Image 1 (cartoon, one colour):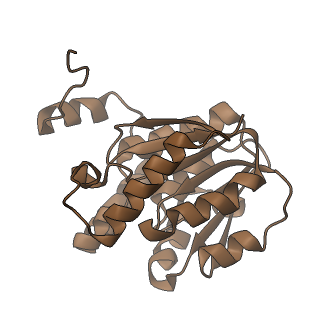
Image 2 (image 1 turned 120 degrees about the horizontal axis):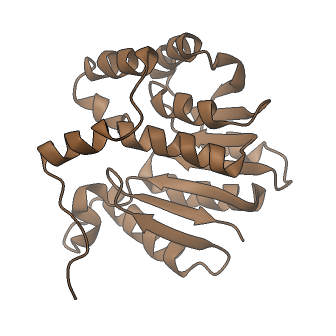
Length: 218
């Protein structure tokens, strides 16, 4: 088989960014402030992921969205901007420090009125939600060892036709290295295998940034 993928170089990645929606002032400033935090800034999603999440929310006509892992708020802004009128985003995180930055930028981006932040272990928050299938879109970008648990809590609450989006499913290529037995790598590998076999859903893994898996509940 011919290799049907294009390896990204820095120049090609800049070309890609130039042909995606441009950042506004709030997202640019948030990216700069987050980068100044040092290596931990790698937890912020990529620009093209943000644009993709906004588009997904719009395509779904999402009114109820959930985010697991908020960090400094870039992905939350992206999702909130794609919500239908009256839509709400529930953000789950445990860090007051990082989400304090997020709160400032939600206000700056004009989406604070659409976002509810709950500072608590995400599983506790998810288990407190109604059992009804009302969630249109969920984005999971938190501790990798809990991804499968988050999935099992979200799936019954996802409406038919709704999406769960997992970030970091390629994990820098480490998931394809069987010799790598690091805990997060093993957890992501197990999740990827599980979702690919799960007959309850339709799933597609795509090489956006560090890998996204889109899971649709039919």
